[in-house]
Each structure stands twice: as structure tokens, then as C-alpha cells.
Image (tube, rainbow, N blue to C red; front, side, top):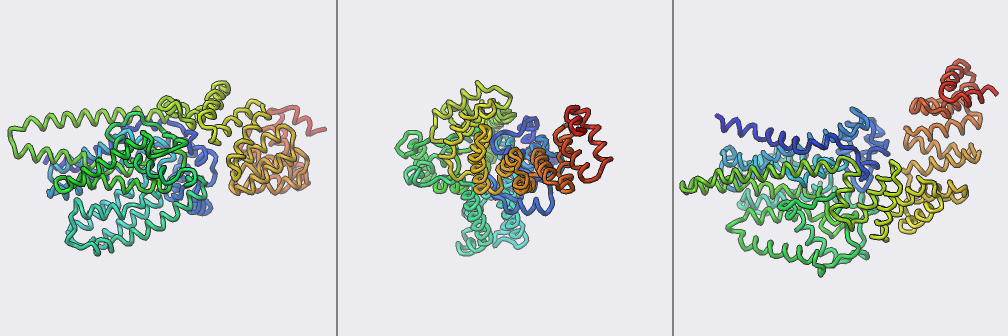
Length: 638
């Protein structure tokens, strides 16, 4: 009875332990690594109306098409606005649920591998260990503690649900049952809607057919045919993923990293993740892509040789130890889309890619439990082995739990995140640059500038450090120096609207309005969704007294982001100045509602009320304005 209760409760216990291991994430902030763009500066996901859902279904922001993940973030915003606590809680709950589901999946895989019932205590214990090895591993910290990587935990949940339904469907030994097949395919579709990395599942299912399910008797044609629905979904998702990456503009060109570099990248990828599972030291949010890569460099030659040796040994041992080869190949299958043939981004590797690729290794670790139990039963003299093994397992899992806790803590803030990254790799240009950007915000300009200058010296070919240096110069009023840095960014990224907009800001602050106007217009042309370009163009026109011309770009900016006070205020002022007070009132009322302490917004609202013939409203706002800015209120009576 006790064994049965423990077996039933083990998924929940594994989930609870995994939740506790990453508990520091609940005190974390949003970080300046995608979170700013995705949440803090993005109004499009805020809500569950038709406009937001339409945006979620079509956006490829930051090179991802993941509408289901966006919907979960929208739920977070509806429930708690921009409080990061709720977003982090969502990640933790999803990860804990995934761990519980892995416990169930591992039971079926281990039972099939050992030819035992899933209810056997040794199988249940092995599945519990597998779930904890996966769920407590420090490599999970990036996916769990980083709000932007909810894609991983949500995708992982549906990925495992698809596998579990498939395993239930083939439990009879024949073709997969229709209802289970439908559930599995549906869960796979949900995984793809969460993150495209799940596209390799059809190949993983074929591998599972060979081992541990041993479905060879069904025939290869039948096994392949039943995977066609998965394959069709995978093909569509892969095409969408490529399009999303292309629109994101961060696919690595072959003229920059050729065939030799891609071979080196593949070897490094297939080695990095299994090795970090075994030895999770030196984990970082950024393993920067080197400027030059070649298979002859020791950093890449060593992994290439290691992958070749391990693969050869596992192939030679395939009959005695098929599980080893199956897990090794399953990891390679999951990692193949990011292994180098199509590379995007500035990272050489990333901890988040271990979320799916590490599942097989976790199950393999759990397989040690029934394997040892079988050996002990065969030889009573080895009874001492069991407590020794459980002791070692407890120490290992405890070490993983402690490592996960510490690794999660580095995601507490942007500064702790990038300080850790710089400590791990002082030669990381992106890490130095991002740390400098963080330090500039509270006005620590000297420290910030030192970090960003080091980033520029490390990688003068990267645009990010120049952009951050330009922002630091702007914040200090050093507009000419800011212009120099932004021009460098534009040279490196001529087709990037944000860079053009930043250059326009530097020019406008020097009074070079004609040049600034040209940059703002070009920025708006290059990036139709960039709010800053029409907002800055409209503000420039307002400052110049070109009120009629200001209205159109300001309306465009307000449509892109209804929550910016300055946009609403400038639009209202432009309309008032053109004698269109009735049109101005809604915009100015929204500006005052967004910033009740804003004196300028209230000043123009009073003028709009008076021009519109609403004296009572004007008197009420004038009284409020006298408390905020007596001089402005007095100006209304002149």
C-alpha cells in the first residue's frame, strides 16, 4: 500500500521539489535581454481582445512565431499588469507541471526498456529520479527564471504530453490508437505554437519505435505512415520559423561563417549540452559567438573528436546497451535545428536549448535505479550497493538543487545577470555592453562607459556596443559624441529603423532639424511597428510649429502605443493649435489620466475645454493646475 501511494504521489513530489529549486525567480525583475522589447515597450500583447489575438497570431517579434506563448503572457498582463512576479510564477508552475509529466513519461519508457510493468517500484523510483535530474538541473534556470523563455517550459509541457499520449496509444503493441493519436498530434501542434524547436518530434518518435518500444514487427512503412500528421505540422512550423528568423534579421550568413565553421558549430553543439548536463559549471546567459570559427581551432576540434569517439563507441555497444545510443541520437535530433546548418543570433550556445535535448539523458540517469535493483536481486551479497547508490543519488540531487537555486539567483536583475556573465567570460563583448547599459540607468555613467568601451574594443564589428555608447552619451547631453556612435551603428545596420531613429534624436538635440527629420522618416519607413519614429517626428513638428504635419505621425504613434503620455499630449496640442479642440480632448484626457501630475498635459486640456465651450470642465482642470504649476495656471488667464 505504501509503495502504491508513493508511486502515485511521486509526480507531485517531483513537481514540488522542482518548484522550490527555482523559488528565487519569484523575486526577479524583467531583464534587459528581450524582456524590455517583449513586455515593457510592447503594448500589442496587453489584453485578450481581437486586436491582441490577431497580433499574437501574426507577430514574429524577435524572430519567433509563438502565438500560444504570447497568449499566456497576455493572461499575465490581464491579471497583474507589468508586475514581474506573476510572469515568473507562471514559468515556475509550467516547469513544475512539465516535471510531473516527465515522471509519467519516464515510467513508460523505462518499463519498455526493461520489459517490466510501469507500476513496478523500481521503475517508479527510476522515473522519479529522472524527473528530478531534469527538473532540478541548473541548466533549467535560464528557461524557468527568464520571463522571455516561457517558450521553453510551455513547449516542453506540450511536447511531453504529445509523447505521453503516443506511448499510451502504442501500449497495445499495434498501431497507435486513434484517440491517443489525435491527442498526441494536438499536443504537438500546441508545442509548435509555443516554440518551433519541437519540430523534430516526429524523428524522436521514430527513434522511440526502435528503442525502447521495439515496434520493428509493425514494419517501417507503417511506422513512418503514422507519423505523417506530425511531419506535416513540423514542416509548416519549420517554414514559419525560417520566415520569422528572416524577418528578425538575425540569420547568420554563410559568407561570414562558411561550411567549415558550420561543421565546427555542429560538433560543439552536440558536445556542449551533454557535457554541461554532466558538469554544469561556468553557466552563463551568453556564450558569445566568436568572430572566427574553424574546425582546426582546439575549442572546436576537441568537441568534434569527442563527438566522433562517443558516437563510435555507442554504435559498437548498441546491442549490449541500446539505451546509450538511443539517448545520444535523441539529443542530436533535438539539437539539429540549432546545430549550425541554419544559425541565428549572436550566441555560440545557450542553456535554454537543453530543455528538450536533456530529456533523454534524464531518463537514462533514472534507468540506473532499476538496473541496480536488478543486479542486487540477482546477487544477495550486493545488498550493500542499494543504500550506497541511494546515498549517492541523494547527494547528487541535492547538489543539483543547490546549483539550480544559485543559478536562478543571477536572474534577479539585469545587473546581477550581466555581472555574472562578465565574471564567467571577461572577453564577452555583449556581456560587457549590456552591463554598461544597465549601469547607465541610475546615472553611473563613468562605470557604464568603461564597460561599453571595453565591449567596443573586444568586438569592433558589433553594433550593440556603439548603440549603447550612443545612449550613454545622449543621457549625459553629449549629443555630438552620441551622433558619432549612432552613425557607426547605421553603417553596420543600414536597414535597421531603430538605429536611424536614435541618430535622429542625436541630431534633433543639436538643433539640426532637417537632418533629424530625414532620419525619423527613414526609420518609420524601415520599421513600420517602431513607435519612436513617428512619435519623434511628430514631436519635432510640434516644436517647429508645424502642427498640421504633426497630426498624422502622432496619430500613427498613438495607434501603435496608446499608453505613452508624450504622444497623447503632443497630438492633443497639435490639434488644439489647429483649432480642432473637440478632437484634441480625448487624447489630452487620456494623457492626464496616464499622468495626473503632468502640468503641461493639463494646461492644454484646459485650453481645449475652453475652445470647445466647456467652461465648467476648464475651471475644474484649472483649479487642479494651480496646485501643480501656478505659473502655467496664471498663463491661462492672460
